[in-house]
Image (cartoon, rainbow, N blue to C red; front, side, top):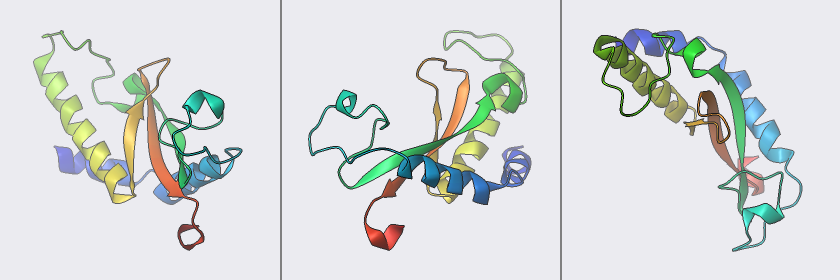
Amino acid sequence: MAQTYKSQIMAWGWREIVLDTRADAISHRGDPEPDARIAEYPDCAEGCDAEGHVGSYYLGKHWNLFPSGRFYAPWSATYAWERRKDQAYAVALEAVADKYGGWIESGEGDPTDVYFCRYWPTTPRYN
């Protein structure tokens, strides 16, 4: 099941997704000083530092991406089969994100938002 999901996710145009995370990271103004509070750099996401920035790309809403079309509360014990499919999908999504040097996060204000994130060092050899 996870392999089928992985092949579907791989067809999303990841080259463009990765490039968009780079553009997002580059658009951050100023490099945070070492040990600076993130609030001092409002364009930076958590994880930005003096050596690089985190770029993100909005993949969509959880219920539009995952097979069940549902978003579950952690304490919910219903729909066990659908939860297993969603878990396999999440594993596949994380594997693809890892392949492209990033990770998957949910939104801070809305946990049903799904993002691909990647850290981009500011040193010239990585840009």
